[in-house]
Each structure stands twice: as C-alpha cells, then as structure tokens.
Amino acid sequence: MTFGFAPASAAASMSAASANRLLEPAEWAAAGIPLLRNPREIVSGLHARHHPQPATAVVAVLDPDERLLASASFVRRAAPADGWMFRNALLAQLRRVIPHDLRRRTPVRTAVLLYCREGDARWTEEDGAWMWGLRDACTLHGLRCGAYITLTRDGWQVLGEGRGGRRPHSASAPEPFATSEAPPPISRTGGASEVLRRAAAAR
Image (cartoon, rainbow, N blue to C red; front, side):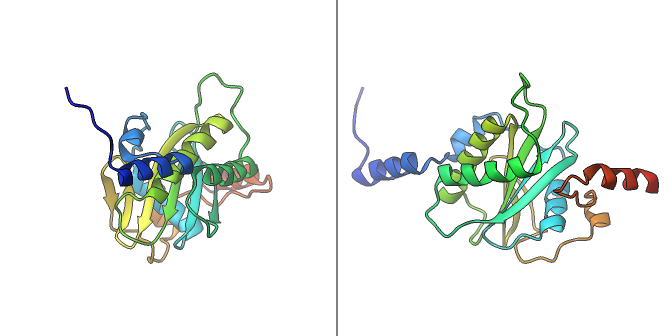
C-alpha cells in the first residue's frame, strides 16, 4: 500500500474550497437531491416570471406536486464566491416570501435555485458555493433541498442530473406564461389568496 500527499496546488485548492464552503459535483450527486419531474416547465416558468440576467439568482419553493408556491430573485453581489454569503442571501429571500417549515418532522416543500451566469455549462466553484448555500438555507428554513439549475448562453442545465435544454438561455426573451405553463405571479404582500381565487373563477 502506498501513501502520499496531494501536490501543494491541490492542497491549496482543497483548503480554499473548505474556506469558501462549496460542494463538489460528486458531493452534490451523493446528497440525494430529488429529481424534478418536468425541469423545463420549472425553468421556463421562473424565466418568464423573473427574466434573469447574468449574476441573477432565482430561488423558488415548490409543493409536493411541483406547483410553484413562491419565488424571489436577486442580483449576486460583486464579491468572491462564498457559500456562507450565498446561504445568507437565499435565506433572507426565503423568509420574505414563505413561512418556514421547521415544525415539521419531515420537509414537504422543496426549494430549487436557478442561477443565470456567464460562461459555459460546466461546473464552477461559484456553482459549488451556490449548492452549499442552497442546502444550508433549506435546512435552516425547514425545506427539502432541490435542484440547482444554471442558465448560461448555452441554455439551462440541472447540475448533477445531466438534463438540460437550449431554451431558455441567458440572452433569450421570456416566454409568455401561457406557453411556459407557469402560474400568474403571486404577490409578496399577502395577496396570494386573491390571485388564486381569481384564477379559480376564470376556469
């Protein structure tokens, strides 16, 4: 049996990863993230709602049937990628748009994250920091950690699943809600019941 040490550059990279709190693709794949039944519908719906530009994160909460309950978008601050910072930003948005589920023994709602960025679809350390942040924010808000999706000029991709598509992409115009099959926007000021009542009356 042979023992050895990682090269200095590799050790430095591992140390930086630990300090920045990020998840490697293998760690994410091993975390048991639930698969989306229809990722394109989710992506198209969030894109139509928020029309994210590069450096925009969209966090969404889904019910057990993958219906959208709430979502929020925000622009990433110009700072080094750090999972702790991303966790705090995601948690702040979740607290604004939906009550926590910390009293439940088992989470029933799932949070997913769509991040629009420059570059290609390959995993980056920034993606790893978002993954770490999403997982931790979900734990602190009583939610299941769901998919992490990147939106680049190449299209969208669910990291860790190998599923993706060319549209929408980071420069595409948003599809109308009727095409994306996304529900009408829900007010963040408590008007959700009124929106749902009108939608039911229109059927």
